[in-house]
Length: 99
Image 1: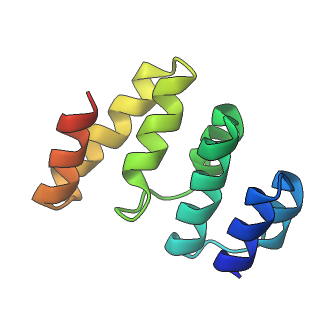
Image 2: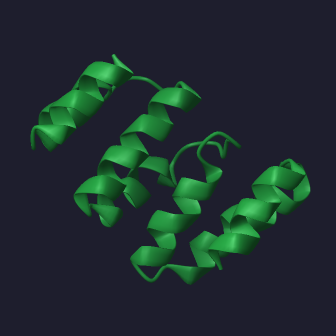
Image 3: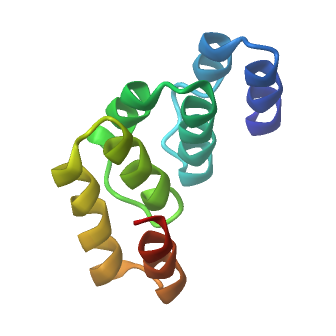
């Protein structure tokens, strides 16, 4: 489904792509949904997506990015702090590089 959703998004069918993945909390699916939002410039929608989910290292960096893009520095830093406490050194490096 991730691949099909990504193809739909590339065709400009953003809502249809996101709807296809709507009911899953699988970390890879959340990552795909966030990347679709990022590619479409829908940063607010991406931030809303992760707002009520438990943080996961698979999409933590993308969640920080969308929150930073909408000016929600506090929430973006929440993801960074989580990565420092729970993430891998690679995840922390991604945040360092993205600052």
